[in-house]
Amino acid sequence: MQRPKKIVAVVGSYRKGGIIDSAVDQILASAAEQGARVSKIYLSDKHIEFCSNCRRCTQEQGDRRGYCAIRDDLAGVLDELESADGIVLGSPINFFSVTALTKRFVERLVCYAWWPWGSRIPKMRSGKRPRRAVLLLSCAMPAFMAWLMGGAPRVLKTAAAILGARTIGLLIIGQVAQQEHEELPARARNKARQLGVKLATG
Ligand SMILES: Cc1cc2nc3c(=O)[nH]c(=O)nc-3n(C[C@H](O)[C@H](O)[C@H](O)COP(=O)(O)O)c2cc1C
Image (tube, rainbow, N blue to C red; front, side, top):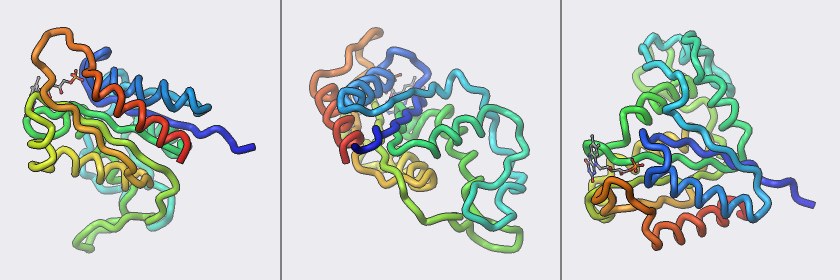
């Protein structure tokens, strides 16, 4: 019998119960129905400092992520993601990019690069992609505009790749933020559920 897949989601929204959180719940619920073990990490609950650009974590070569000298919750979050078969990264689009909360986390992923002083550009420590990723974005503008502008999708795709994941789905939920308390639109709910199945069964 196949081992149940482990799926870990990271929520980069400031609002529990908001659009991103609700879409993540749908993905995880449908993945769980397929037998996956699922869990959710709210970045807003974690103590994650800004990357200070000391670059100590990028100096030593090797497959494993470099050691970050900042003592906060980052290592625990990364251990959890590294132990997953599938990951979900979700963020609202604020000022045409991912939230500052998400970006602060993504910048800390520099510890997966080998970038010693003297070399011009960072190299990924490992090109391996043992896991799969589903990416989620939400925005007030129509979704096609977020696709066209590309900034936020690019941040999440890059983060997924750095975390050793091949992106198998990107859902952009547009035209939200019209009501103070908003339900996840039915179409987005269905797509999120489909992505959950894909993540758990692929
Ligand atoms: C500070 C701020 C900036 C925003 N900037 C944008 C933007 O540039 N483009 C856009 O389409 N929506 C923008 N929005 C709307 C958010 O994308 C929307 O509220 C969010 O997707 C809802 O997700 P949530 O329910 O998970 O918080 C912005 C909202 C805030 C509060």
